[in-house]
Amino acid sequence: MVIQPMTEEVARRIQTWQYEEPYSLYSLEGDPDVFSELMNGSYAFVTENEELIGYFCFGKSARVPAGHNVNAYADPMLDLGLGLHPKYTGKGMGLRFVQAGLDYAYKTYDQKNVRLSVASFNKRAIKVYERAGFSYVRSFIRTTTNGSTTFEIMVKRYEIE
Image (tube, rainbow, N blue to C red; front, side, top):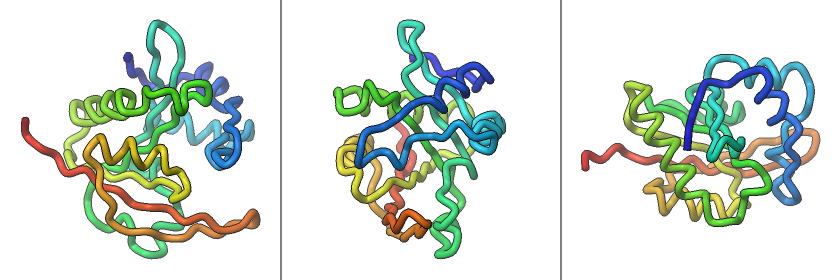
């Protein structure tokens, strides 16, 4: 897997991805605010065999804003966000994808302890994160006009191998 800084062309492609229910929460709209977010310097895209398969984001962009209301991000850690192309979800490549993102993060950022936020209903992602060494820390609820979603904070402490 090759991880590179986000480009405008790739950001536009990612904005077209549509996830099936119940994962539609992860679909990105084609609005300019989302595009600006993808281009803010904290996003990287992932290719394999020259095909776009996903993206990672790091730092504040990886946080769910509602988590700040309950101090979910108080501990100094590197926040990791990710999106695997919808056609590859549930196909058994999640662990390898997450591990590639962790390797990239460890080489790129000073902070070695990594945190992520995941919707509680996303059991298949949680299973992958646990296999990658993440463990549950706490939950919080995000409420929008579309309803409420519980998110879990998971952490992976850096281990010297």
